[in-house]
Image (cartoon, rainbow, N blue to C red; front, side, top):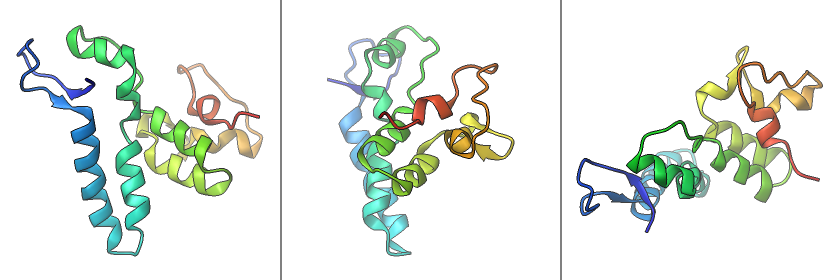
Length: 132
């Protein structure tokens, strides 16, 4: 079983299952997005926002805290499964704020022909670039 959050209880009896977390967030996001006719997009964003928590590294992090990138996986997934601008738009919504630079998402920087500067760590531009 995969978990979204942990507590001090190492038996994991009160840890939040990731599937429950994603379903709850998807329902809530769909409700918000329904107000402007985009419930399906809200649901997708809710289900994909924490996909990186399915990684072994994140699950290990719940037991022994460490630096783990779980936040960009949903954005990467959106770009992979939704080709073109739609995937990039959803990726922009899913990408965490710390992967933006100069007021623009790093995820779209390479599309504008700007250098992919990695001096501040891995860039979402590299992470979200479509695979050819």
